[in-house]
Every structure is written in structure tokens, then in C-alpha cells.
Image (cartoon, rainbow over all chains, first blue to last red):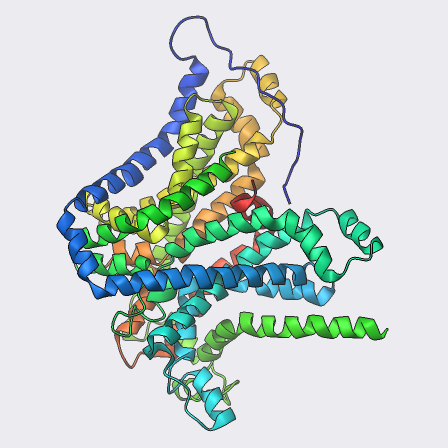
Length: 292
Length: 279
């Protein structure tokens, strides 16, 4: 998948004059880095520092932990991460095996399959929202026609609504992770599979002893990155359920914004600070991975 | 022969549900856009009288929720293009300094960028909103543009740095021996060779900004300032919303990024997806 692969050649050290201070090349380097450093300082360092300062009062945390919506959001977030992401990644792993089949119709299907990732999430989430409308939505009309019974009020029950939000999230991001795992599978040398066939390996054995060992690292990295992204996924919950019914389907991402909109900035920041012990190890893991 | 048919059937057994799952919400949106309100709400798989009337209503802004449709479309476009251009400028220079000039401290800057990339988006939104307030930028398009540049540039820098590392350094040396200045090296060697990655990164930033909901929803509020996704979200504020118009406007909003995505798919897949997780 990599575009160009040329042998790595160490660069000549920039021609550095003997005198002290920066060479003109280094001065240019700093000047060219400056725009990003400025962006980082003004829109990351300052906001984050300011945010932590806003969350300095221990009383904020007492109030946060007293809010039942917070406890519910923590549970929902964990369900989202543990069940939602693992289901998504397992399906992506399975589908990546399906899409490496080289039949023309599968090639066409793979082009369609990327659509949820290629189109903006807002209109499609709203489309799903109406499909789940208890009276007029497509889903319940189909249920009614098939069974002559009314379908459930999908978004009016905590667990049903949360499940639907997870499904929306899976719908949107499944193509991306499938593409990543397809790319991973395509780097496995076909000779390995041929050798396994010669040895009479079953399909499962080929997966267990050829595919999985090559994909495991990529799969783990993808899962961790997906966790980080999912923690920041505001749209799937907010636009489908709005956090309802009765604020029962909030996740940490939507809860922080809810407090912000209610002008309780200290609680909004406290929500994020409380999540940090969990988020920072994930971020650390990903930074280690990518900065190798 | 028999085995082949069985295999094909097995694949179809996977492929058909995948196709339905993938297309249903999008088809549903399309269905609403060509249906009158009554037909849209009737649960039919295809309307008896397909109509393009909804598009006329949207394009002529003939509904309360659509009063500023073209203005909002233009806002989305302007912001997306500005984010694409600014992200490219910030990221291309930073990646050049880190990868080609080997600027001291480049490693630290790269790690700062990666750190930003891995902050969950909704978590950064809260402090970003407060900071934009402190800078008196709220309700200005600049707040959203700068916020999106902040979010898009880390990944852009990382991708460009990876791509730049793969260019042979002999080119730089040759240029340097010929007496090229750093700026000439940037303009005459680096930019032309990096063109495919630059296209990928510019498209990435542009689409990210066009598709963004949360930051747009927080940072902009006046009807004539907001972007299209925020305007679509406003439809939810009424109980009797014209869903057929919402889906029509949504389709109009969703088509350009999808078209761009498919047009640049070659670059996007090679340049971006592998970069995301491959180490």
C-alpha cells in the first residue's frame, strides 16, 4: 500500500558553520516550524491549560459524582467501548477476509461499502433517526407489515436507544477499519497461504497460523485508536438520541458538551479530567506506536 | 463445479446483507428526497409519484428552516476550502522542516502534533470553546477555521513527514551543492515531489471541515453564520419537522464530499488509511 519505497539514505548533516548559534538552514527550519508551533500553543496548550484551571475546584468533582447522569454516562461509555468496538473490529476482521476475494462483484460491493465513511455523518444519522420513528419510521412499518404487531419505541428505552447509537457508530466507521484490515491482509505474502495449503491446512488453521499472527499488531493498534476516536464521538449519540430519554443515553463526549451548554463549564471540564486516567494510557500507547 | 457454486452462494450470503446494511440509511435519505411528505411517511419502498419538488423547495429556500440555505452552503464551502489551504500551508512547512531540514526540536514538535491528534475530539471541544471565547472569536468564521486547522494539521504533518522521509536525500544534496536556498529546495524539489501526498492531505482537511458538526455547532450560532450540518441539526428543534426537506437538503450536502472522496480515493487510500495505523 505504501506509495514509494526507496532505500533510506541518511542525509548529510546541514552544512553548519563553525561559529556558534544556528546555521541559516536551522533558522529556516525554525521559521517553517513556527506556524504549527503557534497553532499548537494558541489552540492546544492554552485551551488545555485554561480548561484544567477551570476544573481546579474539588467541589466540582463532588457535584459531578453526585449527578446520576454522570454515573449513567460512564456505564454507557464503557458499554460503547467494550461491546461496540469489539463487535465492530471483529466484523471488520471478518469482512476484510470477505473483501480480499477477487471477484468482480465483490470489487463493486467494496466501492459501495465505503459510502458510509465517505458521506458526512449528520444526514445519515438523521436518516436512521427517522427510520426508527415508532409510528412513521420504516423499521416499525416493516415490523407491522410482517407481524401485524407494533414495533418497539426504539429511542425511548435506554438500552435499545444505546444499542441503536452503537449500531450507527458501527455503520459509520466499519468501512474504515475494514479497509485498514484489508490493507493489512494484502501485505501477507501469498506464498504463506500456498505453503499452508500444501500442508493441508483448513480454512481456520490458515487464519489461526498465517493471517492472525500477521494481523495481530495491526488489529490491536486499530482497536486502541478506535477507542480514542469513539470516546470523542459526539454525533452518533447526540444526533440519534440527544442523550435521551431522560438523559439516560449520554456518553462522556455528549455529557461534557451538555454541561457546557448548561453553562456548567467546571463540570464539563471535570468530566474530561475524570476520563483522563483512562484516556492518557491509550494516547501514550498510540504515540509510542506512531513515533517509532 | 458444485463446489464453486457453493462458495459463490456463501459469499452472496455475506455480500447481500452487507449491501443492504450499507445502503439502507442512504437509500432512505434518497427516498425521502423524491417523496412528498405523505408518501415519505407511508413506509413505501418506492413512492407512487416520485417528485423533484423537494429539491425546488430547498434550492429556492422556501421553508422556514431553509431560509439561509445558500448562505450556509457558501459558509461550509468557504470554511472547508480555508481549512484545506491553511492546513496544507502549516503542515507542508512543518513536515519539510522536520523531515528535510532536520531542524533541531523537530521531533518534539512532531510529538506535540501526535499528542493533539490523539486527544478525543469532543474532549478538546470544551476547552477550545472557552479559549475561543477568551480570544473573542466566538461567532466568527475564523474560530471554526482555526479550530479545524488545529484538528486537521497534526495528522497532515504526520502523513507528510512519512512521505517526505521516503524521498531520496541525494536530491537535497544535489540542490544544495548547486547553491539552492532552503526556500528553493522547498519550492523546486519538495513541493513537486510531494504533490500526491499534498493532494491527499488537502482533501483530508477539506472533507474534515465540511463534515464537522460538533465544533461548528459550538462555535457558530447566528443563522447566517452557521454551516450546513448545523442547519440540518436545527430541523430537530420542531416536532413537526419537514423530514422530506431535511433529507433533501442532507443529500445535497452529502453529495459533494462523497464525489470528492471517490475522485481522490486513489490518493486517500494510499496516502491516508495506511498511515493511520501502520507502524
